[in-house]
Image (cartoon, rainbow, N blue to C red; front, top):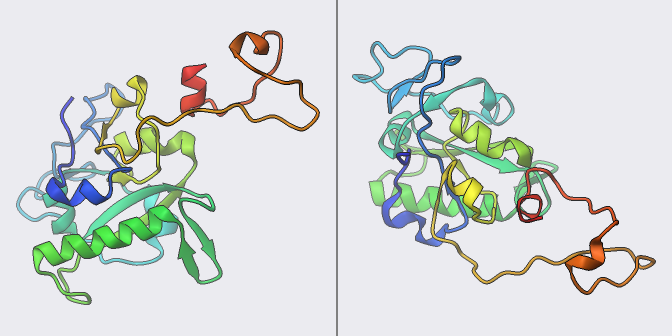
Length: 210
């Protein structure tokens, strides 16, 4: 499975991000070649599509399907970041946006444009467009071409690694802990969970490990 995006040295400080893999063609939905839009591949190879940056894109961003590499994103002047909406990764408070994914991608945007020699406000400045999605949509939307990168702070698991390419992990040796209420019985090991109900997201690494 070939990597869709290679960000060279720029990703060393953004190690918690996901880079999409090129998906194989489906019998239901035709796929475009790298760097071409799915809607029209006749002239895109000669003239990569350019879409002006607009905050509206963050609301309707999932209407566009495109698969390509970093060169194509630079030509389009936009990098679509799929982000889970939460108080830790990405959220909106009034007219302001916050979260580690939002702040990290802003730093990435600045670093990329500095490397390219593009000035803020210039026509060739590459913008990051944030598209909030639920966590269970992240990997599918990424591989379907609705986003270019997913800064979601996801744990690397064999199942996920088969779907997408991960950057270098920013944390290793982490532990997963069982969280219960004050009236719940004491749990020391997995056998203590026999006959009990445990709630986890089906799309989470906890579900895969259980």
